[in-house]
View (tube, rainbow, N blue to C red):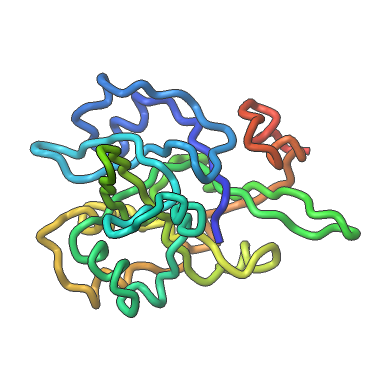
Length: 221
């Protein structure tokens, strides 16, 4: 699963990297320790370029009676998206990019689980493949999302048996293009990211608590 990540890249760099048309209107703050239940920065296709906005992390499907279901739907398995009715519908028409510049997993070390941060070799931001939905109930509206996961690559597998789907740059626009309806193609790009372009290092246990959101969470130990 993917249960924690960061986005510590300045908004002007995200604007350039992801062709954002509305970055000036965003109340953006750096996230060193983003956890389920918090707001994440997601991107969909806009009128001219791409449009970014904040979504609740933990998918609450439009048909859900209780929004607490989102606590159990922070991730969606790439291998079964087409088998589950709720995910297949979103795969067809509600895909998004979830922006990040690292993710965390925990590795057992002498009986103690210690956090490990996974980043790109060049420290650049990237996009998770995500799905989103809009929930309305008794006058309350919630727009939420889930991060798609897949099998781990060579770097991640020593720490965890799943990893988030990090899209190749050339696939990002296709992923958020609603006119793209080829589900075979869309699922074919949900693969483990090439480990050669990534690196990992241990970080402080400060990241264990989502209350901590500062440099301690991403500084090597």
